[in-house]
Image 1 (cartoon, rainbow, N blue to C red):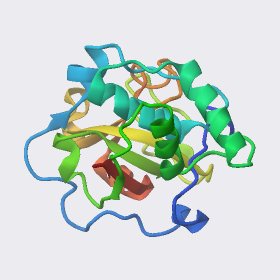
Image 2: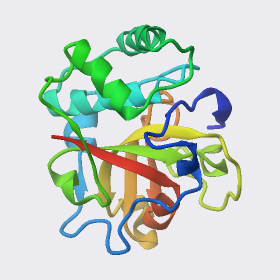
Image 3: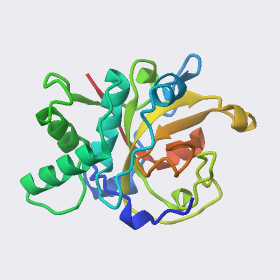
Image 4: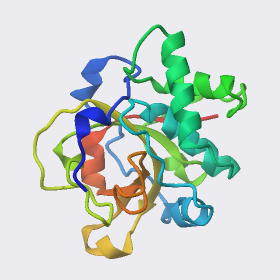
Length: 220
């Protein structure tokens, strides 16, 4: 699926815009130890939680937080609810459709009653906590996102492109059967509709993931 990227990205990086070119936050070692872990079939597909669409709004951070809530509570949050809360939050912050940080999105979700007020974001540098919860991920969007295959695979041959920051929920790490020969993969729940990727899920090799990821957070 061809994607009009400038209209779909909206993550405001927590630290500063230089996060786009900064060294990714990952440790130099393995992303995670232990067996494969996935929230895709057991939660997203089983309970029909995926395929959300942020439309042309820069609401990806809020959609990612909503997706986290859906997986952890199995309660569906509609696209309209996310977009309306996004508009309300941007207005309260005195800005237009310019995106949110994860902190702003989490605060909005707490105010809407989607999240307990006791939960807070914790910055992480690997995927070791993926077994206990999906992980909020902030990505530098490049031409790898322009032509996403029906299987969900990003374009690993694309070079260049700088379309800003985008939020996705990291939901799996390990072997994906159709990509078994390419080693471990990372799967993310996106918010560009169920037609983008495989039922709204995108997949990338660990090396591309390391190149693109700029922030990772859990809620504790």
